[in-house]
Image (tube, rainbow, N blue to C red):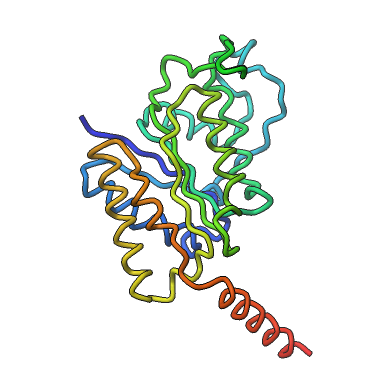
Length: 237
């Protein structure tokens, strides 16, 4: 059976972004494994904020009354098997992808229950999503800088009773463009991770650790970052 995957790319820098740079080999791996993969950029869509009216839970169950590009996106969301949230770390998320996550509420059937001390629901029967995962990139050196964004995506998946399959994390992501031997190996590993996700249904922890490994020592990271900034600053004075 064909696995359908939808990648929601939340980077405002769209095709030129580090998010896209990381997600591209991962996406190619999924395609090589036989999946149907589509990527959308939230920056290219008109997605208005949720206003918390909950009409989608009452007056028009399962339907949002806001007329914007989400109306075309809802059918795609319902039919995919795997939903991937790919985003850079802002504070903590770019605005467009935060709007999209908030606007997923019509997918919920609000028959509530407690699980492990938390209020949870599930998706309507016409929502096919079985797995959700995150691809998170950041500029800071440490991987812990990505934790909050991962927690947000995990919380969404648990609230909707969708399996959270894990997260692909790439701190100091722009160093991946240095074309070092390690960078090339990481990009190849990302393709392998995508292939394995479709064929085996898992994100292997060893593979994820390889993808997230430091590309430079933190002292070099600080030195290079400060040097580049001070150079630009001096050029403007």
